[in-house]
Image 1 (cartoon, rainbow, N blue to C red):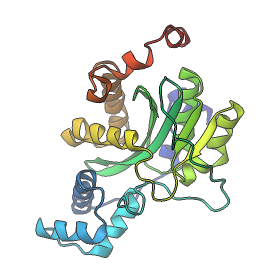
Image 2 (image 1 turned 30 degrees about the vertical axis):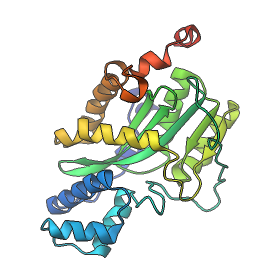
Image 3 (image 1 turned 30 degrees about the horizontal axis):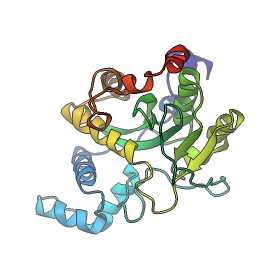
Image 4 (image 1 turned 135 degrees about the vertical axis):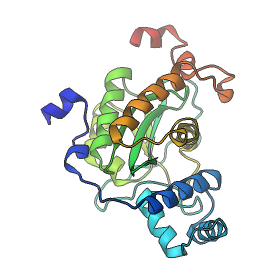
Length: 265
């Protein structure tokens, strides 16, 4: 574990050996991911019909299996990459009537599927809801709680603690090793309600930007290549990319707008 910490490597990426997936299957998963980003309300049945029209020989069951592997669902059931774990504490949703008006008032985290040239991986990112700043991220080829905890610890070390931290009800986020560091810092843990696909809408917008502006433009072959590329992209995203929703300011400009935040940084 200490060696992984020194090298900034997720332990799960070392001992987990992913099963090989055929190029045809990877191409199909990539297309499902693209269609899901464009039409998140479509379930396996309609996605299968659309894919068939494009020449893919695939049925509803096969599409559904791949969607579960990728961690995506149609929004009418709750689009998510994680599933609740029996015995894990589920926290109430706290952002319903809250106006996010300052940095570190609310953070959010989510996981998404990442297509690669010869496989796939998963990305977790932690986002400040006020500024849209990406506070930390991790990439792993196994969807465990460990790489989510690593991202959380990095964000807490670098930016302090938020007032509210919102996630979905997935086992990665409801695990005690994820929620305990938050509770020890007095953070109010919040989890999306069933069927509330819009709760993490800002993170979902981030996934669209990441994929269309970076991942879909390249064919990365290894997790290490993806990790390096995303480090560069998120630096650009935070410091140079103007956001229309922020009146064309950058997330860093929004996050560090006050003297208190500048001193904390």
